[in-house]
Image 1 (cartoon, rainbow over the protein chains, first blue to last red):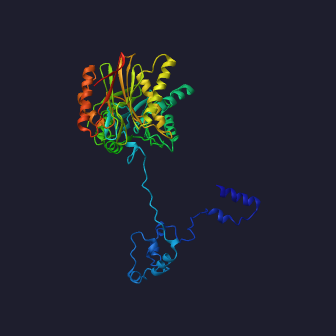
Image 2 (image 1 turned 90 degrees about the horizontal axis):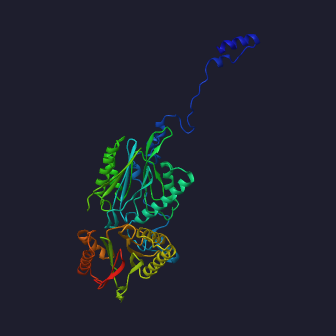
Length: 323
Length: 194
């Protein structure tokens, strides 16, 4: 269409357009190879050509480089800029070059708690799982002093709002201190905002509370579970966990923490599936915890499970092995 | 090594602690009272680093007393234990922490229930039916698992305590020769000979 208009325009203006030919054949572009390469073929960039070159082959080998026999058999003997005798003489003549051997003392963990991990001092584990419009969070009930059991009724899960629950496995003194800290901070939040905190916001509150003590941390790895209300009015399950300095893990399936965390990962990986109904989720979560803590000497001694749905929370205390 | 035990029963808490004050391998004193009476219905057995123990126990004693004077009513056992725990937990992250382990036993005159709290120098606190600190814990806790009865009378409770002391005397290499035993119930605190 435009060419017809152009022809008419040319005739009207009486101008002989020499660029007419160029306009009719459409302009094309190609990607030019890098100046150092001949083509854009990715195979040419993999160094196959270089590998074949005996001069530089060793630097482009994709498997262990075996030098060809003519190179291998003609290697000169290992050389040093100075002979062995020369170096020995230098050391003797210049005593300052003799290095003094410095022995570092073995690093002491602490005066009171030698040779142990403080995260495993009291024992205890927590797990949280997502279901269909519901979440479950469960913990064991043991409090120990290393291998010695002190209490079989030490709670590690605490309600933060009506529909957010927080599990605090780790050093027991910090469990209590942090429980009190969060109670205080949530009360302040409620007074200032005149509403309950949302799970997402709460996760960041937990994170910043822990990061506040970046260089002298609380020895706790919190796990939280809750139900959040989306703007459309639907209910969305929420779980998250952080490490002891507050790095958040927003998981879609399950989160674990505590001395049995490795075992919990294994069992949860095998038992969990998406969109479990509340009662199925309870069973999955309870069985995962009970079976994982039976393989951990520092966790167990009974368990409790909180099942959070949009209209109610069910707490169940479970019997566990007492050994 | 100091040893302390405590157990609850029907309306009472028994707290027992050995009476030796030792330094290194030497016994310096054999009639030291290591159970403080914090308020009319509250007892605290303390053990741990010598020096820290008395210093910390007196600090707690005076502050609980101050609260009592200011408010006419003494702190109830759960509140007192929480405050004591918090003092230890705050101390733990100070430059020079107190190394003191505690057993806090009390009788709540409002709910008429005995309370016993196991607290260690880290500020770990747990409400328990029976508890022990020191090497005695390794023998007494399993024994108490078998013989403790939360509905036992004072006589039965003392008999169970006697079992603990005998077991420690039988099996522990360094046995304390004397214990101080105190009971707190609805009538307040009293000391008993065992």
